[in-house]
Image 1: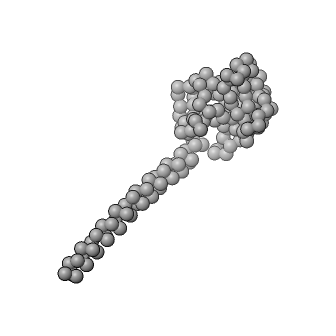
Image 2: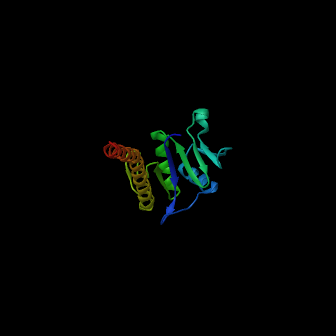
Image 3: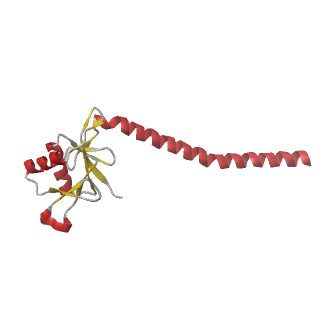
Length: 153
């Protein structure tokens, strides 16, 4: 699956999708070698034709731009493109990139980060309880056997 990095645009927690026209216009303003082409797996993909099959891909899918395991160079391109789109670049861990080497937590992501944290805590509690149930049941059964032997003899 890999590490996904997304270019997204949010305002007060609400995502605002990109159109192909916006992306094409932003690429032209950047003088980027990347072009938007149709893709069977997504709405479109961005490729660098000069690199041919070696080109790293950015997909436009349901109004969101994303790449899997981008190199530092592609990440830098994504950050520049995000600037042109009044957007930001976010990684799988909800870190928003200022630069290739610097990240921060965007205020629009805080509610989702909290929700993910609560889900992880809840899952950890369930695993702990599920692990203790057999131990507790075994201890209870052992006590019953001992009581029965004591009273039965």
